[in-house]
Image (cartoon, rainbow, N blue to C red; front, side, top):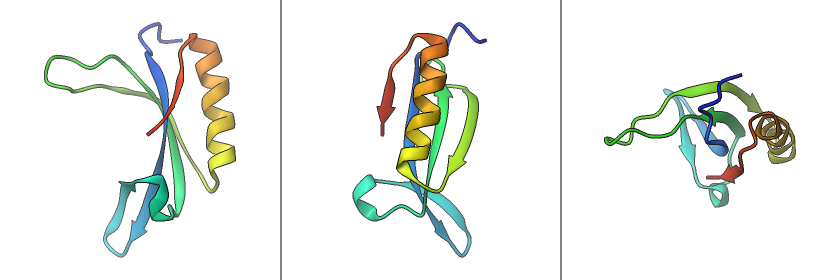
Length: 78
């Protein structure tokens, strides 16, 4: 386990013809990504830990809550 995980994010995404991109929850996401995040450096760069995509918000939050419990960190809906 990476002791540097500061939080687990849950983020909606939209799928387009040329790929996918993150979106706001009110933009009717096509799916949800949950990922562990390390602290940012001075430039705002961070590393992902484990990362998974899910078809529903409930599934993404359940996975994120389990990962956050392992690290003792919060879950943030972004």
